[in-house]
Image (tube, rainbow, N blue to C red; front, side, top):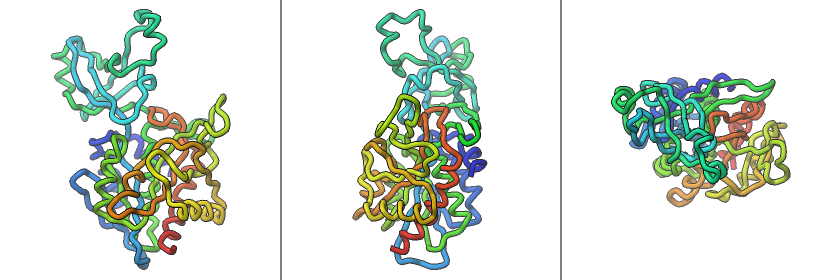
Length: 339
C-alpha cells in the first residue's frame, strides 16, 4: 500500500486535469475489471464477482488534487494564479511548484516582509498578493514556457517520517484511489462498481455525474480527512488522530451518513480487530454529498484516512491506518451486499 500510494501521489492531477492520474490507475486495473471513461473523465470500473447479491454497490474515490492555475503573465515574467480547490494562501508562500505539462519549476513568492506595512503583516495573505517566479526576466520570455490556463502543482517528494508516518502531496485522495486499486486486484465476492471520480475539490462535480450513471443502491466512499492531533489541540477539536485507525463519520457538512451502515462499519472493524474512529466535529465533506442525493437516493457511508496538514504539499498520514483501510473497506463492501 505504501509503494502504491507513493506512485499515485507523485503523479500530478489537479481538478479538471486528471488525465495522467487516470492513465496511471488504468494501467494497474485494466486486467482485473471492465472499465470506461465518461464525458467528464470519471473512470468507471465494473468488477464481476463470484456471485450477484441483487444490489448495486458502488465504491468511490476521487483522482484530483488541490493546486493552482495560471491566470496572467506580468511584465516582469512572474505569473498570477488562482487556487484550484481549498488551499490556504499562507500554506502556499515559498513553496516550490511545477507549472504546466512541460514541468517548469517555479516558486510561489510574495512581497518581502520589510516592504509590508504593519497592517499587512498582521493580515492573512491573499492569493491576489502572491505570484509564481519561474526565473523569467520578462513576459515574452515566460510566454515561451507557460500559457494562461496551465495547471500548477505542488512539487513535493514522498517521504517517510519517523517509523510510521508518510508525507506527500495529494494523499487526499490518492489514498482512496490506492485502496480501490488494491480491492480491484484482490477480486470481489459480489459484482461491484468502483468509480474514480474527477473534480471533487471544486464542488463534487465528477461524482454527481458518475453516481447518476451507475445508479447504485449503496455507496462506500473512500477518502482522506483532516486530523488535528497536534500539541495544543485537545478534545473534540482534534477531530481524529493518526494511528487510531480509519475514520467513519456520522455527519459532515454535506452528508448525514446512513445510520445502519455507520453501525455496520464499526461492528465490522471490531470483529476484524481493526482500530476505527469517528470524527468529533461536523466538518468537511466529500463526494458522498452528491452521491447520496443521486436519483432516488443512495444509502451511503464514507471511510477516510486521517491526515494532518491536508490540502498542502505536506499531507501526513500513518502507515498502519493506510494498511487497515482496504481491510475494513473490503469486508464492509461484502457485508453491505449481504444486508
